[in-house]
Image (tube, rainbow, N blue to C red; front, side, top):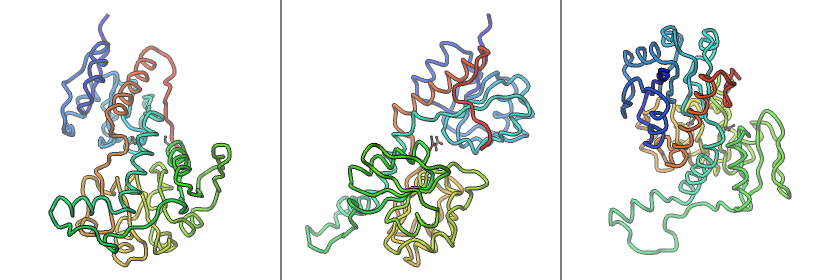
Amino acid sequence: MERPTVYITRLLPQPVLDAISQQYRMLTEPTDRPPTEKELLHGFAEAQAVICTLTDRIDAVVLSHATKLKIIANYAVGYNNIDLAAAAQRGIIVTNTPDVLTDATADLTWALLLALTRRVVEGDTWVRTGHWPGWTPTQMLGADVSGKTLGIIGMGRIGQAVAQRAAGFQMPVIYAGRRSVSGPPGVSWIWRTHDEVLAESDFISLHVPLTEATRHLIDRRRLSLMRPTAFLINTSRGPVIDEAALISALEAHTIAGAGLDVYEQEPVVPARLMSLPNVVLLPHLGSATLETRVCMGLICLDNIAAVLGGRPAPNRVTKI
Ligand code: GLV
Ligand code: GLV
């Protein structure tokens, strides 16, 4: 029997490619650059299954070529890059990779929070460039983390994993989300409105998916609710924040700083943002550990095997 054809839009970690080639025919050898439009259309036209990434825009035009396609396995937990309605119309199943990247993303959120507050990146640069004059009592003073209030916006899997880690820092957690969620035994997480979380937290971390309802959720008005000593962390999706309004708030010091892993127009990062000292800027590293990226690929494969085998996809997504 002929092996089904899978189109992979980007180079994935080798263990994933090995697993794919054991069971399927790869339409083309994946490369480490974004596909051209022509390559993308060809892949969607020829394959029964596609593994694509969050940087591939899968719109109605791309989907109109997909005559043999049964499943799009998005190599990400977020799936705002795919036109779900157009996929559903063509009977194409869309899946994502939840759970396996929850810890990696929560860990990175804390890395950003700590780096920002304790000026880790500035300090490293000072040492490397030979500018450190030696210890002084007033040098590079940051802000305490332990005991401060952590505010979480979006209390899904990742938001909860970030909240769990706050216990080690003795931080009270307040959160805004669609439903009330209870913390681990002995820990209370307090459900609040978005505005209350912004006004009452020392750190605000965003963990909502990008949808029409969450685009620019953090706008000029909501930023103005934050304390001047508060920090904003975003490891979700760039457009959840109005980036221009954030830059103005940072420049005017109406908030203390921001730790960003995601941007409105990736990979473009505004020069004004890059020139600010009170930000830490990462290149969308949330799930970027070798173990996690391998697991994400294997989840894509599980979903492909299910759908091509006529079984329900374990990680099917539908419009929120
Ligand atoms: C990464 O941003 C993801 O959605 O997996
Ligand atoms: C992702 O898995 C989330 O629900 O936050």
